Length: 251
Length: 251
Image (cartoon, rainbow over all chains, first blue to last red; front, top):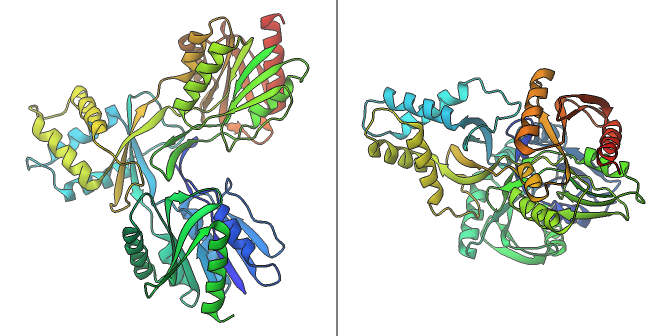
C-alpha cells in the first residue's frame, strides 16, 4: 500500500525576518504514520521543519515551508506516484501576506481612494480595485521598518490545497482534516460535510481545538454519507483512519 | 559571574491557530552560553520553544512565547537577581496583532470613517483615532474565518523590551543586538549607534542577515564610543562578547 501523509503547519513569509505560522505539533501525523506498519505501507510524509517527525525505513520525509511550496511538492508527488490514500492533516495557511503599510502609507493610499471615488461611500468593487492597486506597488520584503505606531498587513487568500488533491489523482482515497475552535458538534459536522462536497473528500477527520491535548484528542471520522465514528486519543484516531482506509480500498 | 541571555524569536498570537513569528534559530545564543565555562558563570537563559537550547549545569532555561511574556519574565529576573551582564540576542516582535477585518468589515469601517470626517481628505490624527476605535471592537480570537478574498490585520507597536533592561537594572552591562537585511555597513553602524543611545546599551552586536549562515556569521561588536571589533563565525562572535564583558566588568 502506498500512502501520502501531510502534517505540521505552513509558514507564510511577511518579510525576511517574520512569518505568519499555522500551529500544528505534527503529533497526530506521526501517530497516523506509525499506525501503518513498515512491511505494510510505503509512506511519503510531507511536513514542516518544526513539526514532530516520524521514523521508519518505509517513510520518506519531504519538507515544505509555505503553501506555494506545498502545492508544488504535492503536485510533483501526486503526478509521479499512485497513492491508495492521501491523509491531509497539515494546517495550511488560508492567507498569505500581499503587502504592508505604515500609518503614513495607509493615509496616502486611503486619501487616493477617497479622491478617486465619486460616491459618498465606498462600494465593495472600489475597495477590491484599491487592494489590487496596492499589491502592484513595489514592496521591499527585506525587513519592514518599525517606524509607525500601527502596521497594516494586507493578506490575500491562498488557493485551497485540499481541492488540488482529487483534481490531480481522482482515483485516490482522500481523508481531509477540519479543525474549528469551540463550536457545537452540529456546526463542526456541517463544515465537515461542506468540505467533503467542495473537495471531493472521501472522509473528513473533524476536531475542535478545545478537545485537543497532548494525547487526549476527540475526533470524528465523517464519511460522505454523513455517518461517522468517534475516537478519543491520537492513537485511536490513527487506528480508526488506518482501518477505514484498508476497508474502503479493500486492500 | 551571573549572566542573563535572551535568544530565539517571539511569536505573537493572531488567533488560536495562527501567530506572527520572528525567526531566530537560537544558534548564536547557544554559542554565547557555551563560551562561558560552567565553573565561571551562572546563566539565566530566556528563550522560545523552537529555538536551539544550550545545555549545562550552570544554565537555567526560561521559556517565553510572546513579547508580553518576555517583558514579565525579564522584569521578574532583573528585579530578583543582580547580573554582571545582559546579552539580549532574542528576535523580539516589534508589533502585535490588534484586530483583523474581512473585506466586508473593512468596507463598513472605511465608510464609517468617511462619513465621520468633515474634510475631503484624511489627516494622520483621524486615521490614528480610527485605528484605535477598531481595536475596541469585540474580536473573537478563536479562528478567523477565511470567507473573504483579503484579510486585513492591524498590528500595534509593542513596547521596546531592550529599553526595559537598563531601566530595571542600571548597573548591569547591556549587550544588545541589531539585525538588518542587505544594508551598507554605514547604515548598520548608524542604526546600532542610535540603539546604543536610545537604550543605554554598552555594546551592540550588529549584523546583516545576508552575512548570516549556519556557522559563518559576520558581526560587529560596536561600543558606545563608536569603536568596534569584527568576528566572522558564531563561535568568534561568542568569544568576542565574552572577553569584552570580562574586560568591561573587570571580572
